[in-house]
Length: 279
Image (tube, rainbow, N blue to C red; front, side):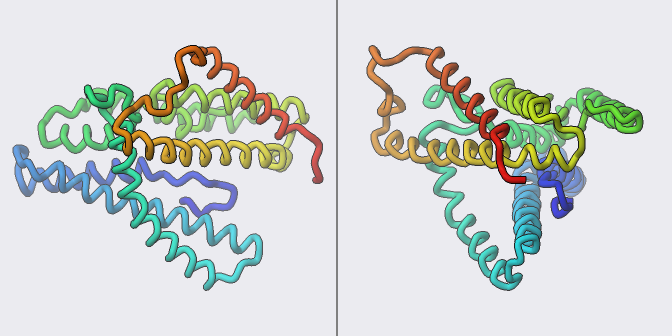
């Protein structure tokens, strides 16, 4: 699924949730509904499948990119192995660092502004809900019905040749992610639409070519934000103070400075996507 040419989507969340649902039901039948170890075991099984899906999807994408640029397959495979081992050694201390600095998931007194973890919260709720008998099956059924309706609508739009589409993955992400995450996604889509209008895009090939600079720019923003989040966490953990890097009060401009920076980044993204370049 992740190795298709022209698609970088790897449905990790869906596969993980399906795995945990199946594993939780099997474990519940074997261990009973009141088992304390059951939810933990179901999450561990899902974690293994999730990790395998992530690494597998990444490897497929890397190998396909290597084929496109003429890379040597065995050298790629060696580096992919090194990358997988490096990730296993790096991820645990980084997550511990983020947990100590910001908190992850549910907010508490020590971390009132914890990093959102919607996928993890959803997966934990599914595992606990099956064993505790509190899983909201009505909401799940409603979500399944909405998903089926979105897919049907998207197919109808595709059949009629409409330029506006309703991909179920994008709609699902917009439904269950918090607003502070979906708003930047919406703004990015709006900028992409403005770029297409500015460049007069009509075909899929033209659309892909037009989006390449913007995708690279956005990828740099995502990577830079992640790296800076880790860098900033180090002095917070070392000092034990969440405000160790805070600006003096007279230099704090509230939300207006952040809004201005977002507008500037959006403008640079638009300019990077629309400036003249070689075909």
